[in-house]
Image 1 (cartoon, rainbow, N blue to C red):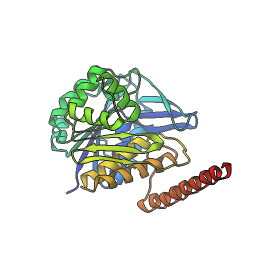
Image 2 (cartoon, rainbow, N blue to C red):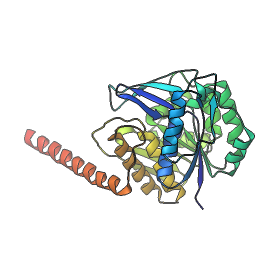
Image 3 (cartoon, helix red, strand yellow):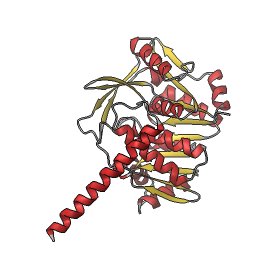
Image 4 (tube, rainbow, N blue to C red):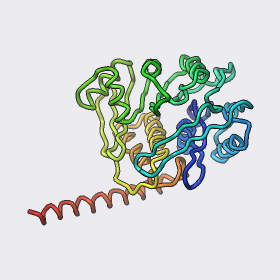
Length: 313
């Protein structure tokens, strides 16, 4: 039976210099999981406006049901102004308040959460009192809770992050977020030691830390795993982390070896970084072909660097 995965939180438009693109981490993750054959649902809220209707149409085009996306009259559909002047480090101005700040608790939706296999959520949607309260009512109902940390100043605080970590089974964050959380907890030492401390303090099944172009690491009961990532020509990094998480979870839920799950997640994250937008359609064979190109490019760079070093001796 196909597993059912819920993604809770923001659905919005990323406003780029080239135009607008559908976005929001929960929606991006849901789409990539759907590509991988899972049944996915998104719990969110949009405005009863043209942007909201366009988002719902986009989700229909990706075969994602919109039954659990509320439509409100009071607040507009969310938008985020993305600055991609640095392709490797996109920055965001997140407009508030918007529709997804007002996701309402609903008994039918609560039953959906109870019946689902996995519940994925992030910290950004918890910035508002209403959506945060709704999230905290749904979390105890979920079987497997995956927390995608997404620290966007000023939309979070230490107390909220600690509460969400306490509720989680699996946590994904980037290396900068790990450093910030480790600072709050007064944890020193190597990245691996910081990951171990956070995992133990919040009783997590596993913790994942992404490192941008330097790959990612995972820590669970069985050990510590690393992958160096793939060096690619970046189009933009929007959605790369979401593709990474969806791919990692796909292999994890299929009980594939941890090292394999990490490698496949790094590969798809790199692939998406070479594409325009967060949820480009792809076929597995296309990604594998790209992998061969990535590895060839890395080998050429390595040989060129070694040749240059040899010439300077």
